Length: 215
Image (tube, rainbow, N blue to C red):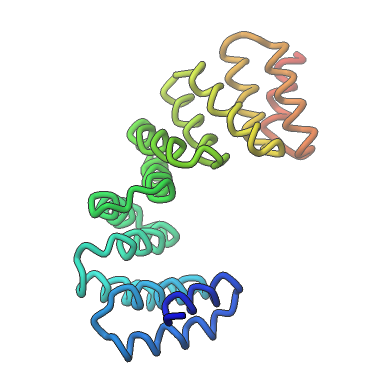
């Protein structure tokens, strides 16, 4: 088994030191291979050493400006450190370089939401759920964006998809309650608030929504 694959196997098993050792050996053996730098950066990132991880992603990009995975990984570091404009640029570049998977579209959507550009996030989150129809959180975030844009029926559809995949998603039930309340269907709204509270009894917003309906 070649080193990069061996290192990835170690990462999947949570053997970070072994993974780091293998990737470093690969970098020393093939210093022009950007993949090893990305992999080593991913180990550092998983261990919380974000700053050093970023230097390895940048090195990978120096070696290959089309290394889409390096832009994606750098985007994650920037996002976690709330450098949202930098994260947005990295995720957009990753997509432009051909990394068109659900995670990249989802992270770009999430970044736009954090930048308070939720309407702009909608097409990216739609693409994320098209590429991975098992991602409950992507449906949830898409539902939130649609609700904020007052596409209530479409938002309800997304929240329903979310709870089908994750029946314990209290926030999705709460937002379904809000959406049905917006449609003046108080019976359905109450049902949804109750479901949220059954999952999470201290869900303050669902409790508050229920009180408003009861009064």
